[in-house]
Length: 297
Image (cartoon, helix red, strand yellow):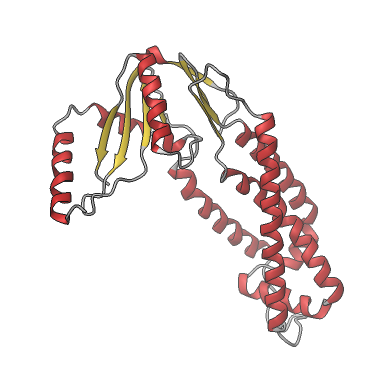
């Protein structure tokens, strides 16, 4: 076992050698964080909770919860009903969304691009993207099922539960369902179909002489020849305190300004050996050697 002192000196020496290299890859790193990268970016991840919070705010203003005493049940729903309703809703949603994600994954494998014998590699939409695609329609479907059963067999408890949820969230869900039930269902189905098409068309193909990229937020693909490759690097952040290496990322910079970064591409938790093999194959085809860089977090 390497002692802490030896390990710290080891990584300090490696970081010192890296800092002495030419600053080529620093520019690649900055450009890779910009608009040239493919797929989802940090801005999208930031906007998702903002949009959800804004939606709840607008719903609370358009469909405010009833005030205390306005046709509200005289008693709160039983604790066993609340627990059972929530467990049934969440449990069925997990089962149905998992099954739907598996069906979507198999459909994508059949409908999407297939790797050819001459290809170096083909990266398609990661597995974790399909549960997100299946999330909304299964949530709506399970909601109709569970609420229908509860309304039929436990009407008083369900009415009290709805009022309690409206007071807690500030949204009159019962009135919202009556007014927007059909538009919500149609909107969810249309939005989910578009999301399915976007996920299906999200891939990166490394051919023998070119990189073909289809981004998530657009339909169609772009072609980038290896002969136009300007730099290729394998980045790996290093925790200077513990010396631990983090998940690597492969970055390809082309002369036209396009940057392919495995972090923002359809590459999900790929092993380092896969990225190294792809980088080495592309480097041989382009006449470049892959450079490994350790970057401080």
